[in-house]
Image (tube, rainbow, N blue to C red):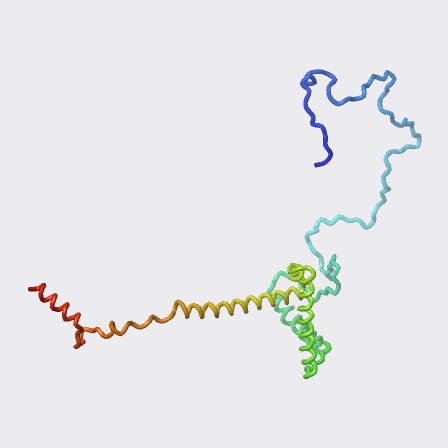
Length: 243
């Protein structure tokens, strides 16, 4: 916000009145004023005009009116502005035919030389020694180092978790990664157990088999030869109604 400053309002009396506005020191005329001062100039009797370098005759000067006609080229130069060393140029071709350049330079000059240089560089390249085959002791030492690293990361994560909280513990480079891995494994284990329990409850409650029908219902059928007294009475009642 800055320092407080009083608000400014316009004064209507200063709209057309002379002398309103910021104060300025009054000026008065100087009757002796003769203009801006400058150093006085006097005549130099030895002045001979503006200096210019002397011009002498050049006996080797000539004017070439046929600049477009190139003479015989004996050399080719390259001017390079670079900070990289080791740049070389070889097999320079001057002409107007790319097919001739490929036939004369690439196939007959560059390729044989390149193959020889490549073979020499491969022969002079130092051979790397074969990698040693790890023994049983080396494997055990490597396994022990990994176990120690895992235990150290878990211990660091647990210590930071107790002292600074979950967020600081998860921000650790390796300990946080192991912490996330442990949390993920714990959540996965809980989810696996929950899925087993929910599946068991589903099979126990929802997918349970229906109870068998009672014996009296199963015994009644259309081709049953035995009839109960109630069935006979119902048949007599139907016969009486039909009469």
